[in-house]
Image (cartoon, rainbow, N blue to C red):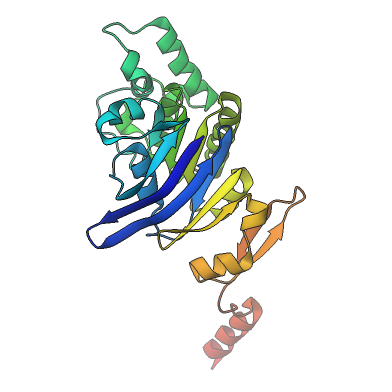
Length: 273
């Protein structure tokens, strides 16, 4: 279990996150949603130990995060930040193997190499193994870094917009694999997503942030509502439910487009005049 008690982050006079209290259970995928600038990335960075807490505390399976033991704390975390730019003269396979950096010696073991190849195969990107990572597209780099994170065998997964550069197929592959491994391995998994429908489809629990504060927490079917989304994002939406009872969001245009036939008639009439 990951426990957040009164977690508060401030930089000078700017409050990033205020008074967050949460209990996140192992074996569940928790997805953070909310408008831009509401503290989502700051929260992940704080959980990784990159941002110091102004107030409050964090515990993972009973062990507190402390400033003097951050190296040990991070060894149990698989962290994938937003920036996937890799200016390294390494192959995709070599980047994945770095997921076991803490246990690597001067010689790469067969087990480490096999595990790295299996991670690439599981994500359907084994064909990239020998490609220099700096030649890969943004989406391909995201998949390679996700494979690296998997190889860490973490207790806690922190993923910041892991599907932002992926096409629809690879979005589903990554999220399916993340959800399955979270359940099978008993990870505490926390991901930031902007796609509300993807979040609703895969999250066990949604963490909804607005203005740095917790606005809602719970299963998607109980949390996602038209009023909540309109209040946070200031856009009109309809919220429907699929055959499994999961919500999906449809945004509504503020103004209705003119009928195509009417527009075509008006253009033709103008031309004829």
